[in-house]
Amino acid sequence: MKTAIPLWEVPAVPVAGSEARFPVRRIYCVGRNYAEHAREMGADPTREPPFFFMKPAEAIVTSGRMAYPPMTADLQHEVELVVALGRGGRDISAAGALECVFGYAVGLDMTRRDVQAELKAKGRSWEMGKAFDASAPISAVVPATRIGHPDRGAIGLKVNSQSRQHGDLADMIWPVADIIANLSAYVTLLPGDLVFTGTPAGVGRVERGDRLEGEIEGVGVLSVAIA
Ligand code: MN
Image (cartoon, rainbow, N blue to C red):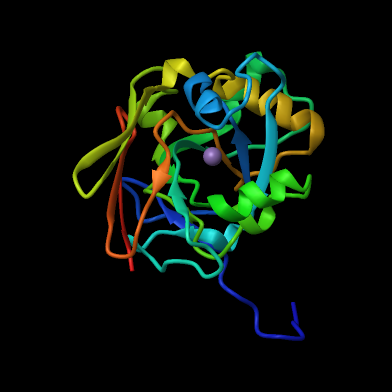
């Protein structure tokens, strides 16, 4: 293809135990998928259908360093299990959903909480609170052929070695298969899509110089320094 401007590199995530990388097409995120986190955000944690927002593929960070973003004084961490889709489809059944999963990673849904709160209050869309540059640090993707499909196990985040967030994958209001089924009713999912599956309680502010370490039992560790 002859392109009118120079073609950019496709954003891609390392794959554990492989030279190959996982190319990222789109990033979907689930809001409020752990009851305790819904409560800490002042929301009712009843089992309403999951809701979704997006980040650009270019928002991934695989270098272990993210710059503190502009236009916020309240950058917050949300550690999340990330699903990497190797196959897509629409109207995928929950029973068949896990067959679409290539693998899993540890991700951070970094959030300008002050911006998000203002947008929420005005009934506006969340993008500038959620979908900014470097807002999606992510670990290597671990293939499901190696670890299976984790549906329980500790998920946590430390800031400067102090525990901030902790929960268990078993506490997800909507498990991975249901998320994929629900999302695929709205959009045709495609290989390369990532889905951030929501965060447990304990979200909080980070500052320049902080070191974040997210860990999900059976999946891996993600270390990120805020520059
Ligand atoms: Mn989140």
